[in-house]
Image (cartoon, one colour):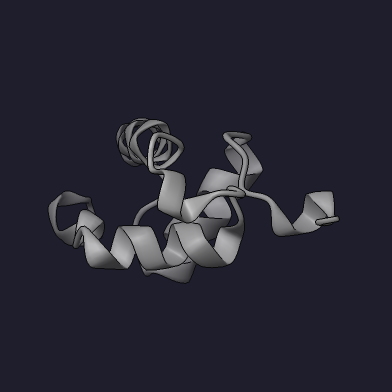
Length: 70
């Protein structure tokens, strides 16, 4: 079984952590984009269960931060 701490969530502090990790501004606009990414991420069977490590790989695979405020 997986720990809750290994799972990704849509909580503001979680979104801010990921944005900070990738050097992006912790803004409402960027958090909204992160939520859109998470919604897309949960649709992919290959990424289940929805763990942080897999989410980081997903956003890197999608070059998701290219359009976000730095």
